[in-house]
Amino acid sequence: MSSDLNKLFSSVKVIDTHAHVVLRETEGAAGKYGPEILCDGDVPIYRIGDYSLRDVNYIGTAFTDPEIRLDRMNEAKIDIQILTPNPLTYFHYIEASKAISFSKIHNDSLAKMIQFAPERFLGMANLPIQDPIAARDEIYRCVEELNLCGAAIGTSSIRQLDDPCYDILYDAFELLGVPLFIHPAPSGIDRPLIEESLRKYELDLMVGFSFQETIAVSNLIFGGVLERHPKLHVCISHGGGMLPFVAGRLSKASRKRSWVPMNLRADGAFEEEIRKLWYDSHVHSNHSLDLLEKIVGNDRIVYGTNFAGWDQPENYEANERSEQWRLNTLALFSAN
Image (tube, rainbow, N blue to C red; front, side):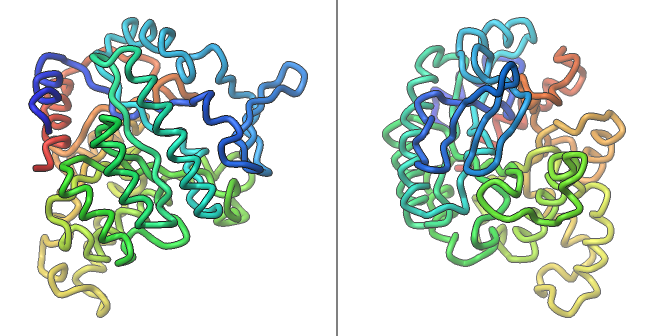
């Protein structure tokens, strides 16, 4: 963490690490994939390729208007927000050339938004991870030229996150000393739906996100990413998905299954690995938060809200965990 960032974080109480933005300058930046803000009568629509998100209005909201965001942050007593890309526009499965172009436009626009209130906003870049070399080059540009503080990506692309092709990207995060935020994108947008049964009742959002987050954590650990990159700081959204509930089963597998790397077979080795990751607190239930804290430790959790989203907390007021979460955020952003 730079000395300026350290000073900024040390002087505030509440830092929100899970706050997405929708940037008007990116409309049409991915060609035929959009994104595009439309209306069907009185129904707002956000189009990404052949996918349409209905009944979510972005115009004149905290997603697109930094002044409204600041007013809402003040009401919620949130001092700083780390602005991350809209997961609908990660574009990890489209043609690499379009994803690269979109990411550059997105990140330039995000850097401009941050300048509206640089003492209140920080930003994480969008990366075209289907091309690891281009993603590496873009994170360097974003940190060194645009003053962004890290990047946010989805849980997978055409390759899973443990693929060795990503080692050059993870090396960059270690050398730059910035964190990586991992958040799912709905399937069915720029790739096929993961599982047909998720089509009903918006289960891809309700259940699929947790499924994807748990797979991402499993790939990072079983694939040896954390062992190969000991200085890599990764934060998983929504408390790691189903991880707190299935951690015991994954731990059992690490001791019993023949394919598991030797370094994970010892008692407690898997538990040690999951405590190398970070997790945001946006889990919607005190029972879930208590379980997450018990499994990963209270020193690995940071505050997250999905600010202004449909599932934002009903009460943003600081609680007894706030100071610990602030200290954890300082540690998350102190990779070197």
